[in-house]
Image 1: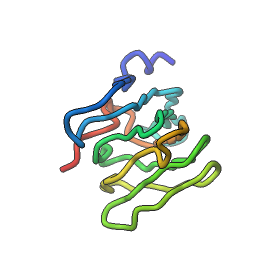
Image 2 (image 1 turned 90 degrees about the horizontal axis):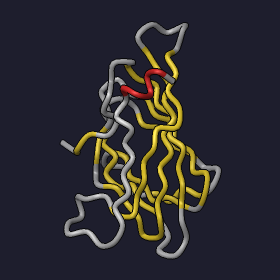
Image 3 (image 1 turned 90 degrees about the vertical axis):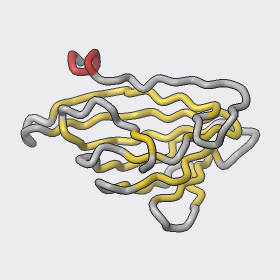
Image 4 (image 1 turned 135 degrees about the vertical axis):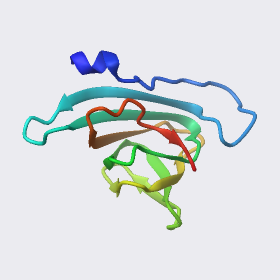
Length: 136
């Protein structure tokens, strides 16, 4: 928990309409756990809860070059596109992975009327403080 204080908590809530598609909309991102991996020197595991209100989305983004991510939809349905792959809709209980260097082109609630949530578990360098980076 002491690392949690030094981690950029990524808690953002931007209600209402946004001016451009490269801005988060109706999305809240919160680090819910941060644990140094004692058997993997220099690596940590961080859990990130992503909550989307109806119609919510995040802009195209990447993650630190060291990050491997396993994301599971825990409520609702999520529209996602990794790199140049197809845009897919994942429902509660379904998951996907992102490997170092992937670009998350689409990350959005697939519903305009119901909320959605993702739990994303990152394995990354312990020294990383920013977990979401603008798309290149």
